[in-house]
Image 1 (cartoon, helix red, strand yellow):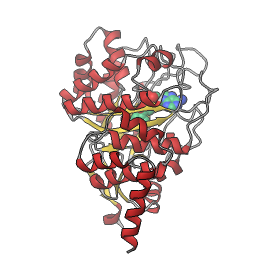
Image 2: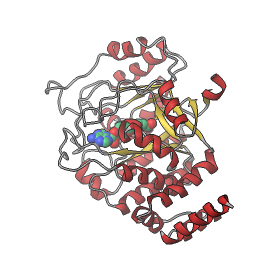
Image 3: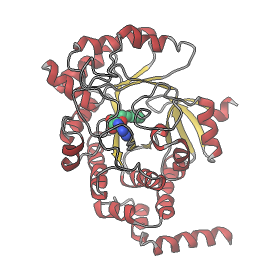
Length: 378
Ligand code: V47
């Protein structure tokens, strides 16, 4: 029978790829370890790895694929950190290309979209040395005044650590005060690669992995959800990638507060690592697939289409991914670093992309409540 033949072909393919024991572990609900993760990265058979990741994706989500109606805002690119991979930051106010929007200007971007049924504002900023803390609390309060129901996913853990040090507060105080002002969740930026070797070379000025994870832990304790990212395709080793995933899994075991893992493809233009090539499509598919397999306790694996490219994000829907981020609209970090993707996609375009991949699109809010199902709407 054709189905039996296909299944037995897959089994023999897994055997040839040396992945049968990993498939067995997944079937038995046994956790994969560091050496399993390394083997998944090293296996020449990308389709076998993808097949395993897809199986886990379908076990959890079937064909359901999420996106959201969001806007990305960056209020300032002034940043005291000099991360080697960053093309966005300017060290000081007044440096060429440096900007800091007034609160009215940032709020204006939301006001200008009064006609859009946005559910999320996602803010990531540079680490500005001179702004008062009230700039950030008022930013949040203003967003909520303009759109009371909107979800504010703002400030990476690296920004929270910076605020605490700059304004003489604890991480918990910063998070509580921002929450009081309207903060709903933390985005996953700033994780880069947790391994101290990589972090020291690439992002020496940023808080270390322990503090990044501790801030997420604290946010979870305060009832907030967070995402976690990994910047891949530069100087990190395969072991360092898997170790990064295992540290995320460890935190998730403790708190359960992580919603999504988002691998971020390194973009080399206009930064200090411009001599490195960008990661290939197959590497991107594999990182997402291995993320799904290692992170058995993180519900959503997101392909950020701005970073992977639209075509790879769509293909990744068969490599473990069940979320495509959203409409985005105002992205700069990736576009100044050479992203060739569009700046925005409409809900209709995202839905078409998902449907054309043989998956079912669902518009979600930030907390993965379904806002709209295309099947119901059409
Ligand atoms: O933290 C900066 C990365 C991140 C480059 O939580 C770069 O839902 C590649 O975190 N090449 C910000 N990456 C973006 C981010 C994010 C994106 C989408 C969704 C979510 C979420 C979070 O961008 C930074 C840094 O890791 N980054 N420069 C670059 N040249």
